[in-house]
Amino acid sequence: MAPWANPRPYPAGQRGGCAGWQANRTRAVGVRRQRAAVVAGEVRTLARRTQHSTTEIERMIDSLRNRVGATVKTMGDSHQMAGATASQADHAETALDNILTAIGLIVEQSQQIAAAAEQQTAVSQGIGRSARSATAPPKGQRVPSKPANSCSAKWGTCNRP
Image 1 (spheres, rainbow, N blue to C red):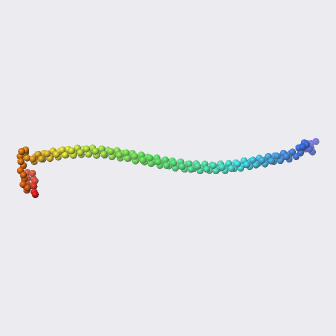
Image 2 (image 1 turned 90 degrees about the vertical axis):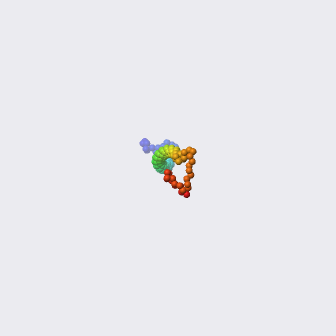
Image 3 (image 1 turned 30 degrees about the vertical axis):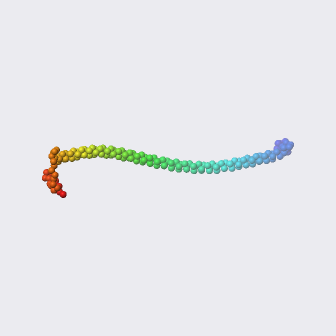
């Protein structure tokens, strides 16, 4: 007899086994589809979180770039200011050196003037002594008193009341 013509294709007690197997298979496929749907949902959630995190990281990077740019600009400005300050300090040092040199010259000239004044004082005192000795009568001689309205032809002076 042909196998397809067998009126009892299943052994005794296993009738409808194919239908049970089919039901189990269908149930297994459903469970797999459910699991796949859960996994797909988790993948979508993870993709949204990843996108959100990526956007947040991009914002942080942009913020850092802006801050770094501002910091670099500030550092450049500070460098320029430091250079200007150093230049001003050099000018101030030169000016102070010039002032010290001028003070030294003033002190030297003041000393020269003081020495000249001292010499002039000595000379003036000497002239005064010489003039007094030249106009004084010789020792032991009296000087006649001059009348109130007298003139001296010798010295070119007149005493008038």
